[in-house]
Length: 320
Image (cartoon, rainbow, N blue to C red; front, side):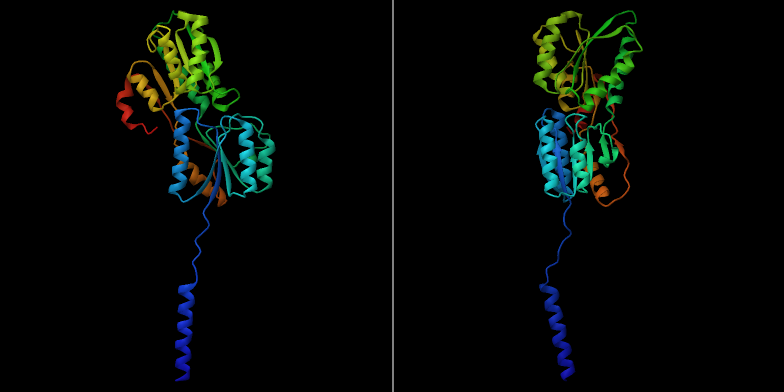
């Protein structure tokens, strides 16, 4: 009887201990993310994709907006290091000037993922992987589209003005490089003016106004490094009494909804896609990196080219 009573008491104690002991869930992954800013429709969509993907995956995201300033990104990265986050991800404002702060992250044993834009560092081991578009190829695609169009008027000189992205940024450098590489095959395609529009609609309009004032009707083509600058430039072209898409052929990059609306209206001729929807891939890469799983050093997103002829059909499919 005593033995049975002891058994019952032991079982009761065990049950009480089991039900009253808290169950500790696994600690959520913490990512520090420094965004370039909010300079365009593309960037806004990119931010939304990253925030939504983190929330869906149960990842704690510490988000910092750099407002287009490298010094703000460096401060944010140092803050993430001090907070001992599990991983740092960022889309760099410019390519150079990252060695010191990335060495600090490495010394703290915090891995780094680059998103959208690359960096130029002396030691590639300072970051785990880079996910984003092939900007050189985007420039090439824009150049190839123009090269094909130029075949219709083989004896005509085509004067091009170029709206570059932020000075020193990877997309600005690479989109210029790829475009120039392709159009070099036709000596009648000439870039007569090239200036930064800083990836913003307002600056794109301002610079295009200056181009029109200097070159006027000599301009045959506008090549803009992103849709927002192109849309700003379209406004400047219209205010100058010209027809964008007809008097001046307009080529841009990104593939945002605003560009498709401009193409449907006959004001933009083609946009080269650069998808901002990197969030889900970034979260998976982050999990793999923190778990010490092998990841590719370079992850390239799949994208296309959309001329005005397909804009109306494709528009309902656009998510950004």
